[in-house]
Amino acid sequence: MPEEIKPKAAKVPRDKAFYFFTSIGNYTGKSASSLEEFRNVIREITAKSLEFHFYRGDFERWFMDVLEDQELVEELRKFYPLNLTGEVLREHLHRLVESRLRGS
Image (cartoon, rainbow, N blue to C red):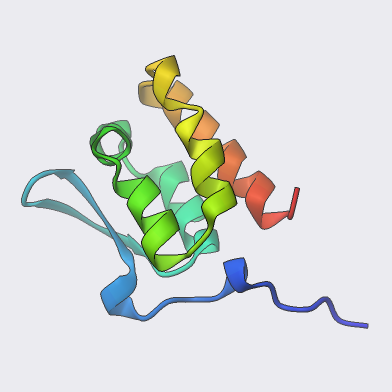
């Protein structure tokens, strides 16, 4: 029996996608319309972009307001006190999203 499609696997309209920037006005050309796409983009996007969005709370807002995933937001919030940067931040974000996609 095929696995039921979970809401977290659903795509959102392009106007609700997450658009990656490195700073205000500096679009990277990358976006994500689903949590799966988000996971893929964070593997290749610059660490500068990840830091920019993470510390502004952009990921948290998108997870909450667009994906409506309170559990993911709560897990993400645990990262703030760790003052993560660069590749360490990338790895933490990737593991978090991968775990969420797997349903664990």
